[in-house]
Image 1 (cartoon, rainbow, N blue to C red):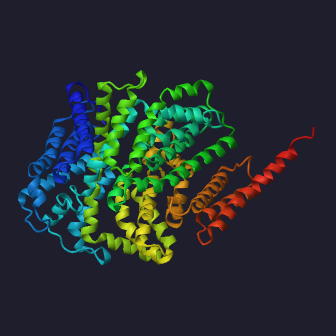
Image 2: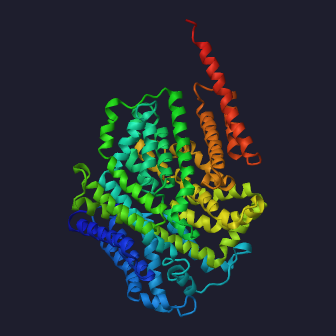
Image 3: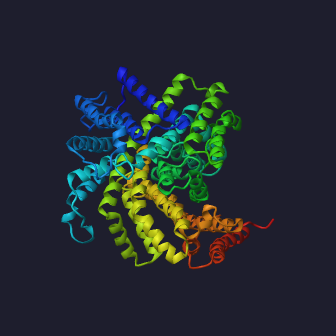
Length: 637
């Protein structure tokens, strides 16, 4: 990203701040007509990307080139045209009214500029996926077997990719959800950071965990989880918190790759943390018509379990290696933490409003205003006009890459649905699974992790959901006896968790690579350690399907039992690969803990009570052995 200065830097900052402010205003006072709003959203966020991001390494780093200005102007043209003709676009009959030369030319410009903006500001892999999707629509009729499609005319391809507001493409519902709910929550997160809430989270994590063995690693886990309430981006979490926690971990003795792995695993989990989960969670609400409040409620226990597993793994690793706590000079006093405690009030306001079933847009709007007002109560957190503008500009800079990535995902989804590839690819996976739900889930897990190698979490989840959710519902209703409605949210959460975890799993792991850059370690080795510490995501993902009580469905006893099963299983597995419980573990005990932990987590052929008993017994035997051995080692007085 360029560091723009002078009049251009001021102009771009003002532009992004104004765009974010308009989205915030809409959240409180209502949205304009959908097509016009989506046109405005893309018109204000796509063109600046060509000014902020260079085309390549040889491009000017301090200012845009003439070509960049031309790209920006071209990117604005089709969306400004849509705004000017919003009524006509809304009234036209999709695939019935002519899609003439003017519309085709505008569609080409919109798609080409979108691809280039995606390549520059998001991921080249996503740009390639969009391009391959369009090529498949054009040439799919030449392919054999299940890959064969009907013949699409160029007009049909361009219309479905660009101007079908009710289905997919650039102007589809996915762009609509970004321009509404997601945009408002991004603004709220930016004001949290601008007010000093990040300092509150950092100090709180250090005060809670800094005095214990391996303190910096535990601080990283807690701080990253709290930062996740502000940002759904794992990479931004790594950059924000890792700059502090990774050097501290290395200072007390963690290897660079381990420190980077811990930070990236913790930062990835930020997208799972209520009340503000990643952008994919808002897309999930739109795709399922399930209120966002219900989604964060269903995801809450899973998010806590994810961080419990990382903390357990970090603890066992620290004890085994004899890690020291943080230096006392680095641990803030509780009075320092309490000086910022009032900044937590807007978060409670947000949670309360959403629990009372206010719309997410309005809840985030009110919470943002509450953040500004609450921050004003103390001098150290007070936000002047500069801080407010900076927060709005920061929100705009976050929205812009997200706008193009979601629009690109819309094109992929349009191609998958128009060609029938959703059904075909789903049929391939279903055939490979052979009617087995466990094998189906494993294959879908692998599919999402592969998608995550080249594209960000939200597009990965969107594409995987289009392919996988119908398959899970079809097989799950037959195998588990649940209704399709009961399986809808578990299926989406299953795919969402693996889309999130893909940012930390090798061979391509964006969060782990960012952490490796800070730690000065091998990106691949760092991603291996990130996967090791984030193993909970794999067990919790499957629990959404097989243990519906994990989503706070069922009686209190059922909820407590399945949660206890996961706690015991995760503690066993993390202790097994760390080789430490209350003391070093022999190979035999490590095998015992690993086996009983996996049975507890995945032994769905057993009753819940039996799974809990196995996992608990696996923990109890080495604990008792080490307790007895420890007492025997103490000389008699």
